[in-house]
Image (tube, rainbow, N blue to C red; front, side, top):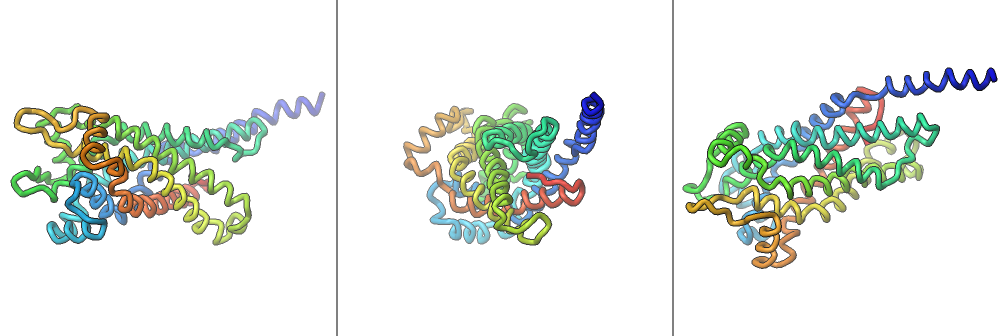
Length: 326
């Protein structure tokens, strides 16, 4: 009886300790946004190249040809770094929720396991994929206006001078789209954007967590706290997840970029009526492999972006809270 009473007294106390030790969602969001901005600074030129290759069709032969022509035409700041302000805004509107919500849900699930007396990290892979879908979907819907601005600003320099929109910055871009095309058009392409983000985040975050867990248990990278346990393990985990994520997300990315970059003609008509219409017309005119157009620059950008952003998020979280983000 005494032992049972002791258990009844200690159990709620332990649950309270676990709940009190949980990292607030706001912290997780800030860590996610900060990590995303750090990665965007290094990877933005690759995003510009990807967008222009996906929207321009056959103008560029390959990634290096696209980079050379963009730099020759517009230079470094207005060419390869065009739209970087939108990229930073995108991290606060999209990256923060994508990484922040995922790491928050992951910790809540770990805490629930502890409360139930289960192994803390005994979380099914399917649950991790679902968390990635959830965080990616929420973040992408909130961040669609900044994503649209990023695509517009990145692609503007390739247009003939008479057809350029000449946005001053990300704020000017969003304001002008609202005035000239309507506020609802800030969410143009929201369906492929959300679909892309759900599959991308699911693969990127879920696969990273799963591989990291297996590598940690394998002992190949040493023990927790050793040099090999940190950066090399994250590098392997995020590199693998980047490749998987790029395969499943690239078709959505092509459709999204084309829909967001399309212009309304003099008769008020758009070249694509819907996501499915864009899909059919693109495949019909350029072949099925058009869905993986820009795969190389997308992967070359996604891999370092994933490695940098998720590693930064993990290290920032560890430094401030003593916990992992993934």
